[in-house]
Image (tube, rainbow, N blue to C red; front, side, top):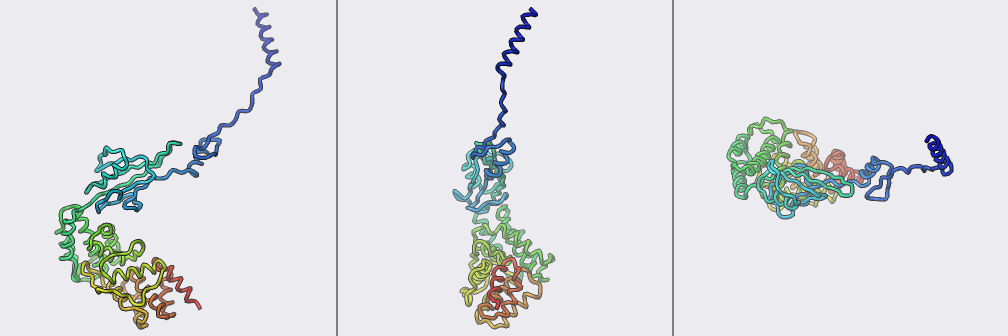
Length: 382
């Protein structure tokens, strides 16, 4: 037996020597990209490539054609198609903390659009089958819609109690106490009250009972505008226009306040903010300057006065007076800019280079009119 084992082992050794086994070099693993012809030596490298070259789009929510922020409030009734999503393959919907039994994207959006009152949380997902990647997005949608009759009642109350020249903080408080109990109507009324408080703060008149500092007017105006700009109502439109004019918010849609001089002044300044054509020779504002549907502060009244009074043939001393007014007194930076812009544009049209330069230099770093002012300064160079 030992002899046999020796013979067998020796034969195997002979066979191995005659036919040696050659083991080739092992090929490195390849990780192919599922979206292009690229290949990578590791999963990590492929993942980095996909993230950089083939990113997955984040789901987006649109309200009436505009990209929605992460938290949005609907105050106007939604028509079919007013709510839409892009880059979304899956949706989950929670209403007032409870999950809604909807799986279809269109059905979930329709449920929000049909609501008058509610707090919705949307969890959107954009999934990709090729590599299993997904991108999530979360939105909060609050629905707060009042009946037209309730908003009409708030408008009447506002016109009766706050659309006057001698309003006080006490009047605003009484207005708030008299608002309807409906949550949406109260929010609307509170926004109108914030506008009036902002106006009283800006005027800083002692008889009004205001104690807040001048700088707080913008805070009240912005709070009011966040609610009012969405509502298609006459009073809301006029107040929103006054606020945007006060804050120099000239970007976006033109205002439609139904007050000719306010709309004309806004359009003129918006053109300057876009560095477009200069003002007309003399503004034509049929219907007068009176704003019957809401109170305005004294400085806004002064700015609108200047717009109506000035023109190509306006006396130099009036254009100069606007610059001097902008340099002194308690003025918001926005009102200062408007006064300088009117003085500058009418001085340019009048061919008054010295006065034009003086006003334009003060606008050279302005947030609204710097581009126009600097172009005008270059054109005035000898």
